[in-house]
Length: 202
Image (cartoon, helix red, strand yellow):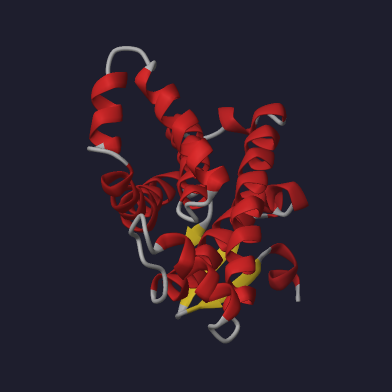
């Protein structure tokens, strides 16, 4: 009983995760909750990919099809949408907790650096998903995003040209590729580097 009192064992695919007592604060799990929402977004996003069409003419209609015609499509899309908002909120809350508790000074600076990069990329991922609906609000958001990119220092115009392409027809397929592959892949790599080193893998 004393052994189990000192540590909590989680078994997932034959891997034991051992958390020391100092990590068992509810606020300490904000990072893990962010990761859980990332997994939920991956699963629901994979289902939505089966029906979404990333073209300028069919994007909005495919979203309507998911909402109105696909069984449980409305539910899956809403889970994806709310999980996206939850992930941004949890990531920001996790960042604030790590900073104001001073925990970012412990162990390795790479955890703090990768966490900041992950925070920015999380917002970009949410923004790109918001734009894939391609309704009036998404077009306005795209215009604002492109304007901000163009006026970014040094590489702004080149970056805007790289993302924007020759217009909306190029942009939506590039945005789709960023949202479903490039940015999530970057997040997985950064999460691997960001994972706390005091969590022991047996």
